View 1 (cartoon, chains in turn orange, blue):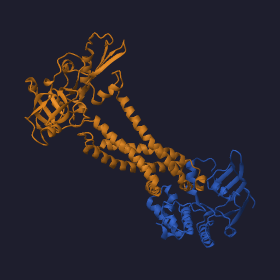
View 2: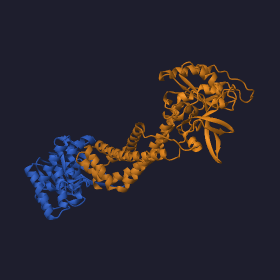
View 3: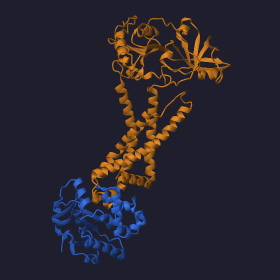
View 4: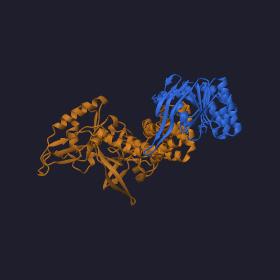
Length: 416
Length: 221
């Protein structure tokens, strides 16, 4: 019977080429956008170069202080001293790295201006990440202790500043009137690796800012690497205890006297979703995914409604066939099932087209310079989401027309 | 075999009520070949549709093979049509997207019959109507007479006890019409099929065992 359904499906698709084209165009375009968006979200969330430990790391970067009496709040990245005082007091983690938020600066060479991003980090940064060193090595605790003015650059800066593929280690680079010795060259990573991407990495001893200044807010993030996955809840609990003991100091601002503080050691995604919910207590993951799912469903529903319309026209066109099938023993249920299967086949064909289109778009994005170093991938996760979405799409647009079709009276259907 | 008791069919709209059948009482015995005649709009096809469970009467009871069919749920009606009835329509009602063999297989598709068995039975049915050389053709590649033969093959492939033919020769010339009547007569005589045929043609009706005449929805003879 399934073979018969498929035969009919293909015949119907061939018979009305324009409808088929419109249907497949709508389905495949929608799915392509969804698949590419999924690949992008996957790229944003999942572990990837150079944050291959992201899935088993914790992030502390935002601290929120609230003045419940005056209904005020202040939030932003944590300070370097906060990391040293509170985060480094944790006993469970294997490594704790400090990395500043990115800033930009111009470097000049032969009247050629290069706008680059830079960060300050500690030496642990190179242990919690897995950068590919094309040349040289990272700075160590010893370099920091010696107050060495060294820098790790990425291949983009090397190619622009030293020459494409030319050796750079040992060369001096002048940045903001200060000379730095290039100690290593890493393969760059896309800007979407929010906590680690940069063109230049300096050891924190070279920072002009007063990193010893005691303050909760600053310009840094902490990346915590546990010994193993099972340590994560333990570290979170340990940090919550530490955070609960932090004393809020009165800075003499009469309009803002914080009496509550929120800061958490979160997984990568939670460290962002927590910001959506405002009060800092809710991790916001459910909220975030509800919004994403809602947008995806809304986005899918428009072509689905269009497909329902097209399907309704197809049903009227096929009323005679429905009457014939009923006359010879097809029940309403069987016919509804046939139509849903036909629609699922149609959407799966659209899904297959979307897979190829998505591969093309992903290939283009990866190879164009729209986002430098971006590495979107069409992996099994994205593929299974695409198939699931195809089936959902098929069901969404097929069930109602199928129900309407199955309710057609035989005599009326045969008159068509 | 078939018993209709006090059958009425009324079509109602907001303003008009049309009586299509009025107090029809009819019995058809097993193996009979009955024709129904009457002017256009007298209710012949409506009566055939009610016998074929394609339409429901407004009043009255339909009994086929000892079973009352009024109010049966959709799945049981579908099963009953599939097992007991075979239809032949004036305008053939073949599925143009399917080749001849698949069209003939259609009733078997809704039974638990294997694909190879379906092929075999459909081929046999086509052989009976002399169209075994047209199995892979599509309906729009056939003449009117050939299409009707395919429709007959489809009606008989599941060996139903009752064949209902709604003006089976209405769209054919007299030669083709006679050929179709020959096939129906053979089915009745050789296979003992019970046949009820609606027709406008007196000559065709004369070839059946019994003639029922309708006028304005009522049985007149």
